[in-house]
Length: 427
Figure (cartoon, rainbow, N blue to C red):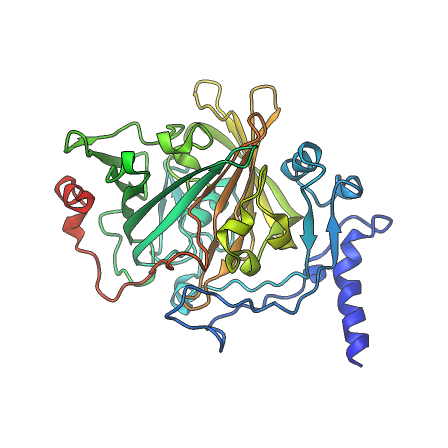
């Protein structure tokens, strides 16, 4: 009986790979949602580990340079295809059963009853605070806003490193810490003057940039209330306004690999692009990446791309959105294609293209369910630049790193999020 059940499971998951059959696959192929809403019994809140709920799952198949052509037209994205073409000896994708494990706090679901309202050409939203803003999305920007305003904690403190890996294996390492107040959450009773959130960050490594700090105040309407930002320079010990920290501004630490509006997938104003909904698709996406989270950092940082032995890919239903630069606007990324998880609203991957429609970079955001919250977020953002063959890992979360505190018992003082407060935070 057990063997029969295993065989049926394998047949169900392998069904999408039968290219002779009808290429249109239904949601039944990946099963019903099974959200994890509480910690596993082996979870220890005092450790930085998130035990894998699916550790017994076996690899169904591996896609590599020998067989990826078979899936090129059906299940792979342009970025993944480019990875196979660029790194044929090392890039592969281990495919596992689909586990739709994502969850949010029950308070979020209780508030989620109807769509919010898009205003000012999509630059703002009006609606219930703390909910999923568009539970019934019908426009491209609905998916973008669902990603931006997905539940991500309340009163937040944490630190995370970033890495830039060169083709020869040499590395640039950086680190910082941050505090944040997230106003789009179910525990806030009003819109706090229309704010989305407040964030302060400071660099703690490398030493030459130590204490270089930034304050960002983000509204729910970039048209009426554009982003406000300040920076603290440790050399001059002064705080100054920084109106350029938006769009395609590139922080020096990014070394030309990512823009400010690519942090967390996408953030900020949307007015420089035309947004097109390309519809729902079934694609292989980095998902339930617990094995990667539980692996030592030094084991996963390999030349060209992360060590693919530790990444898990699943068949996922995604909403695919194209952002194409308007004729009268400028941005160093003329075109983007974004893939948003229908369950969690997280961006799971992205491709960027130049003016000749040549792919410039492929990005991945492997997610896990931080089930002690619960919420699904990425454990890093990986940007693979095809011109330089370098890659960048940002916002790295790992068992090697103290976990982010997503809901502090004592809220941050709102008066801390001021230019004077930034100076104190930096010191």
